[in-house]
Image 1 (cartoon, rainbow, N blue to C red):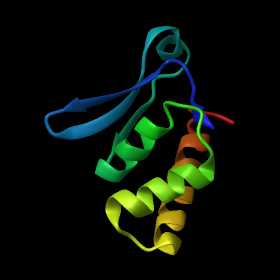
Image 2 (cartoon, rainbow, N blue to C red):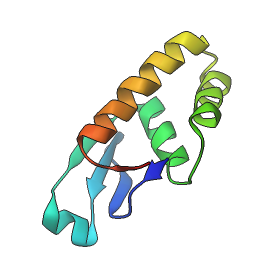
Image 3 (cartoon, rainbow, N blue to C red):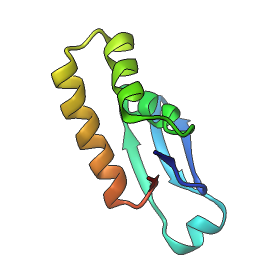
Length: 88
């Protein structure tokens, strides 16, 4: 799974924003505010990575329980799906 073309992650004034760019912005103007962990996941989703790799990266980098990381990752991925930004 990965982020579709036409979306970029940008940092403005200490806040992470995922925005549509290029022709994608003409079809759908999307702006998603992300926290640090979501921005970390977004960056991982820039490559075509497996769910299990993303989950283990969260657990390792943030020293969080895998169950909590899974719940939060699933919630974030659902938001991405609802906005049509994932290529699965």
